Amino acid sequence: MSTNNLSTSKIPTVVVDDLNIKYRVILGANTGSAAGALRSLVSGKAPSQVVKSVHAVKGVSLTAYEGDTIGLVGRNGSGKSSLLKAVAGLLQPSSGDVYTASQATLLGVSGALNKSISGNRNITLGGLAMGMSREEVEAIRQQVIDFADIEEFIDMPMGTYSSGMQARLRFSIAAARQHEILLVDETLSTGDTEFRARSQAKIRELSGAAGTVFVVAHGHAMIREVCNRAIWMDKGVIKMDGETNAVLDAYEADVAEKKAAKEAKDKDK
Image (tube, rainbow, N blue to C red; front, side, top):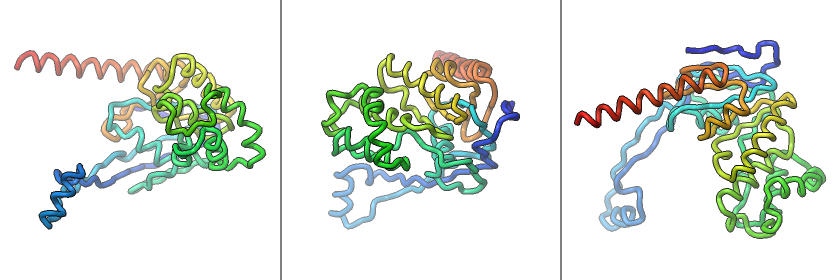
């Protein structure tokens, strides 16, 4: 079920054409712990390994437009995060293509941040990683600190922050500049109610300034609030693409139906 081309009067910013992503996972009973590795060294035997091929995204095609805020929903393993990483250029397609009007930013410059240095220095590091000049970083520094609400901890190592504080800092750095394409993967599920409200307002602001935002979040209430469009992914394919409430209603009904069927099956055992 698909209802693409919701915003055909607008300018495309992301085009995904028959995208396939495959990767290999190495599984092995002796490779998952230090004890297992030590046993392999002592015995002189190589650890038993099984290479599993994962087809994470299967022939996905979509177009996103200026001003779109798109919520991605689906069960764990449905391909949502793999799709975002491909749009950001972090995963190479096995086949198919991804075209973007500019470099997509995957929230929130996590790879550039360093937990061993202070939050203050991470603001500099994150800003530079996004292509800002040092002068531009200085201009937004206090804005980032205030938005993340970490003033009293700003000179402490980021590794001493709680997961919520780290998420707030990452979001605040990434949201300090306008992005033509911003990808938000689960980050907003971390943090208090007040920060989530501010984050939602910032996402609306970013998409309203002719940007495109993709959001993956546990909370569907947030997706209903900020997204004009939703895409339901299931086992690597797009099952439904359309108006947010219609897609979420269908997805939640499917989840409820499968849960009821499982409970009935368990009851009969």
